[in-house]
Length: 412
Image 1 (cartoon, one colour):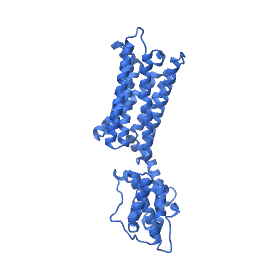
Image 2: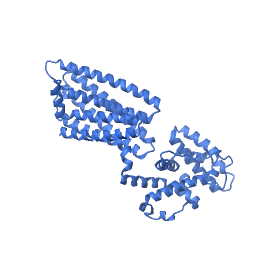
Image 3: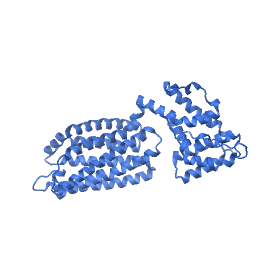
Image 4: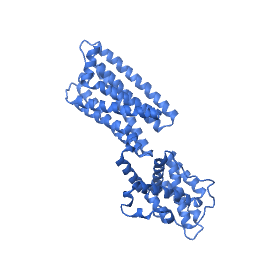
């Protein structure tokens, strides 16, 4: 069973490595290079772990456990490279480089100690294997503890933490899904570590429980497949036809509350009322989403004379107080512009302190980037406390009229 599972992982690893290597050659980056190294190490390590191949290498070299030591070195390389990639995604380049270097030195030191312990086992009078069944040997116990704690536990805790943290602020849907899938894979790897530690303690205590190899093979396979899928998902996920359609439908739905408030107040924006019919958008989601994106942008331009520069000051102050940064902060400020602009338009009050220039954010990555940006703005408009707080704090800007509105049902 373990031979079949390891062979399955090895095949998937080499295919994934080839795919990512081609992407790296076309669009090189630090993060992609790190993940190429990780997948190359994974494919090599899991191939060496296939029992017939491992036994053949040990027999050919006359060094028992050599295949396992090399495979464990590959496992440490995988963990270090995945950590390297996530650091470059989550942190500024200088900080990411500094932390990545620390992890490399710690990993290299741990592996050097493991190699020294492996060499020590070669001098024993009786041959031993680097498995939990031989945990009564101090060198084997120390070797396995270093490998499990350093190679899996420490790295997987950090990888899982970074993935969940970055997924919360990531604007790209497939990158967010990939990070969460990777986090789940890292959590399964933690189960592998726990399983190893439990068996190590049991064998060191004189017990002889069975099934460790089978459990380890299943956990390694599940963890590896999840992490491979998660780390490559941003590349292959968006090109799947069914998932693209589903993503477009979700984006269309998320833009709905903002679009409805804009077109209710500015009905001239809506150029195709047939899309309001049941299933109207489903029949041609590409067209429907394009219309919705264009009408929201047109609405933002139409509201520009009503957006007061003082709204920006208040929104930025509240966003800073809430700890928002980067695109999340920009999206909240733009959502506040829309909310307060709609209120001023209802009240018929043109901005007394107009903005000096158009602050409409223009995201990169073409049309896909535009959709990702506007869905983020729409989400902030619908439920972000900073937007509601900005509306409340700037009520005085439209208090000169007899009719003082908030911003529609969303912010009442």
